[in-house]
Length: 358
Image: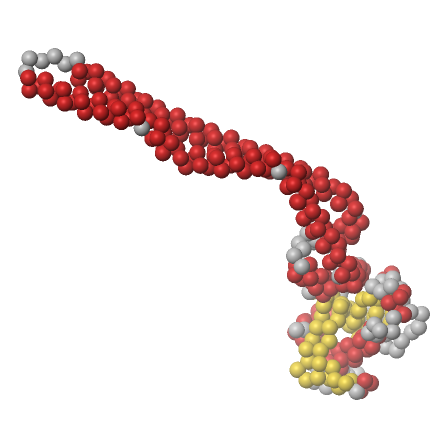
């Protein structure tokens, strides 16, 4: 299995597109396929799930109501107990003051005043009993009443709540399917590149694989064939083996797309990338020689080969400087070439390419 650097570019773009559109349920291409395959079943199960969620939420509300009601009753009982104890104590003091017998007129007057004061306090306590209980339990009572109102409203509006939630969830499902449909070309590309990555991972000899390899040239490269300058290149997969460097592009196109004159030619794109990378590695100013073993005949060339992998359909025609292969032909094509570098050189080439990468 090769040493792998980077992530598949189309997968990164796909994740970003889903994130930008508020979709976070997919972690793989397989999950997207499963969603589409069982979409009708998702719709059928949706109402059941919405009803189930409603019932669970209603049960939680009832549990909260019961817990708050219990707290309220406990607090109310504590307040009432303290008030009753205070009233009983005052009653006992009043009775004691009223039953005192003395021959001293001054003491008698003092006990009489004490009795009047205690009697007044007792009257106030009895008169304000309910108000004091309400005052000291009003916070919990307010919370209880508020939750009771929510529970009643939740119960009375059951059908409308479930209906609205179902419509919202159904809209979300339809939105996800619509986004997938809009992103279908990108998804197809991600599927194709993922299949190629898995196929390349089967290579058993020493190799290094770069996903989404890109270079922005400090000095643009002149491309004589098209009389243009190449300022950057982006490659789906760049594979370094003992046989050289393989520039691998993936297209998961239908037969109709292959015949579509409006789509940009992948052959032209690869020829540009292959030419630029070949000059970068073998042209004047390249430092790749420092990573290769010296040969007594002279400086060694680093071969670069362009491979276009067509997942489903490929043209019958052949093109210069490009090998067009199906997925099941890819590794056989790569293994066809004789090794000309050793393990250390493969790792050295990969390190050089890693330094060049943006």
